[in-house]
Length: 477
Image (tube, rainbow, N blue to C red; front, side, top):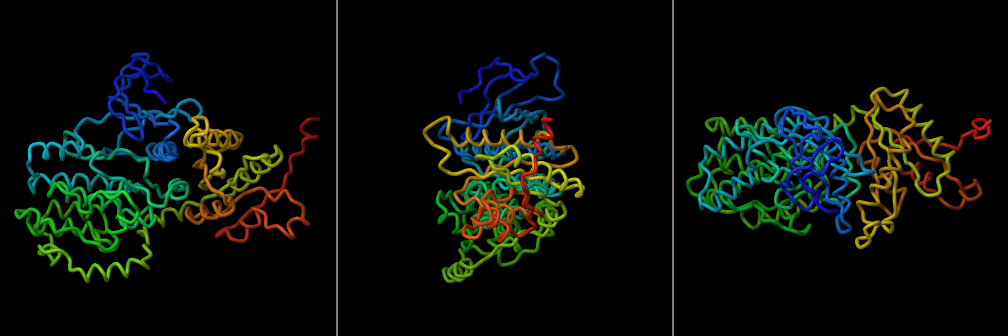
C-alpha cells in the first residue's frame, strides 16, 4: 500500500507528515478534519499491507487494537479511534512528546560516551514502573526494546507498540496464528524462544538487556537471526558488565544480571521490585553474581545446556490465574460451503451459551488453508486474505447481542483444521468449543473421523456440536 499523502482526509481525520516508515507500519501526524481542537496531539498508525508483508502485520494490528483500548494511565498512549478492516485498518492515538531510548543510545554512540550510573538508574526505574503498570492491568508487553520506550519530558516512561503483547483477559492471537518464537531477537526472553507467552518476567528480561546495552554499548546476547542463535540464551550468561566497564558498581551488575537470568523464577518477581533496587542501591544484596568479572565457566554452560534440552518453562501464576477467571467460549465458523442453516444454528447456540455465562468471552475463529495465500499476488497476500476472512467473521457475529461480552476474531492458517482448533483451545484456556456437526451421514462417520469428531476426541474442554435447525419454510411463510 502506498503512503498516505499529506492533506488526505480519512474518517474525519486530516493526514499530516509521515513521522516514521517502518517494516510493520507507517506513523502519520493527524488532526481533526473539521479543524476542531484535539485534547492532545495525535498520530495515526497504519499497518503495512503489501503482497510481500506477512500476516503478522495485520494480526499485530488486531492485537494492538484490542489491547490499547483497555489500557489506561500515563505509561501508554491514549486511544482515540480505529479504522475497520474492510476499508483501511488504522489506529489513532496520543502523540506523546519525548525521545525514545533508542535515540538516547544513538546519542551516546555518536558522542562516544556512556550513561552515568545515576542516569541509567533513573531510566531503568522509569521503564520498570511503566512495565509494572501494564502487569497490574494483566498485560505483558513482550516487545520492550529501546525503540518502543518513550521518555517523557517529565521523567516517566511510556511504552509503545502493543502488536506482540498478551492480555490475560483476551485469547492470545499470536500464540497460535504465527511462528512459535514471537519477539525482537536481541531482547526476547528465553521462555519466549520456546513459545511461552504471558509471563511478566519476560518484560523484566528485556529491561535487563536494555540496561546492559546502556551501560556497555553492547547487546548481552548479540542480535541473532536464527532460532538456534536465540536458544543460546537458555543456558549462556553474557559477559559480566564490569568486565566491559570497570567503573560500574557491583550492585549495578547484580541488578542487571538478575534481570538476565535464563530461568524466569530467578529474576525479579515483579518490575516493582526491580524499580525499588534501582532507586535504593544501598538495599541491594550483592552476591557472587555482582562481584564476578570473569565469564561463566565452560562446564557450567554445558550443564545448563543439558538442563535446557528438557526444560519446560512455566509462566507466572498471575497471568494464568487471570485467564482462568474469565471463561472463554470459542466458536469455529466454517468458511467453505457453509449453509445458511449451519451459520444460523451456530449463532443460536452461541447466543444461548453466552446467555447463561455472565462475563464470558467469545472467540470467533475460522481456519484457512496455507494454499489460500500468496507472497507474489497482492489479492492473495496474507494481509488481504486475513482481512477478507476477518470481515466475514465480523459479519457473521453482527446479529448476536455482544454488548456485555468481550469478543475477538481470529483467522488461523493450518492444513489440519481439527488440530488447529484443538491447539487454539489448549493455548487459550477455552472452556467450551461450539462448532457445526459433521455433514456426513452416520455411515460415513463409521469409516472417516470427521473434523468435529476429531475435535471432540482431542479437545481439552467441552465441545458442543450443533446440527442445522434453520426453519426456512417458517421464516418465509
